[in-house]
Amino acid sequence: MADSSNIIFEDRFTVETVDKDGKKFDRVSRITAPSHNLQMSLTLDLANELYPLQEGEVFTLAIARTLVPEELVNENDDEGSENGEKSKKIKRELWRSENMGLGEDYDYVMFGKVSRE
Figure 1: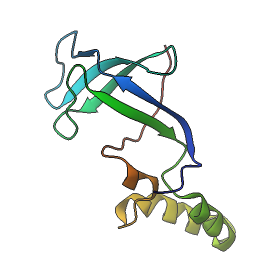
Figure 2 (figure 1 turned 180 degrees about the vertical axis):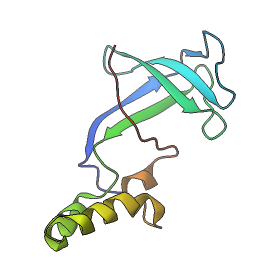
Figure 3 (figure 1 turned 30 degrees about the vertical axis):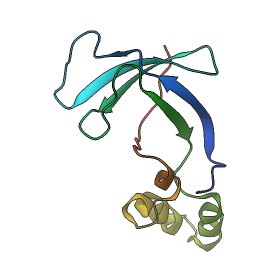
């Protein structure tokens, strides 16, 4: 298993609804799901062709700062040029390599911003 020190949140959720307000996009579903361990509810848009979820299914959601393993981040910081271009390139290109870092441990990986209502 990859180094998980970059994970800042992890919990299990049960899908409560799928597209309850109707489907706005062909390949995207909006799910709502309460958490198992915390008193919170999740609303998530996901690519339903890549990772279809049905009502009642349970999944684990993890939020991480980066997919780059901790040891690789530290190694690249030491070897980077003065302005850090080398380490930025390695971090940006990691998802394209054979070793996906933390992403190897999950079936579906997303990149984006987290918003709170």
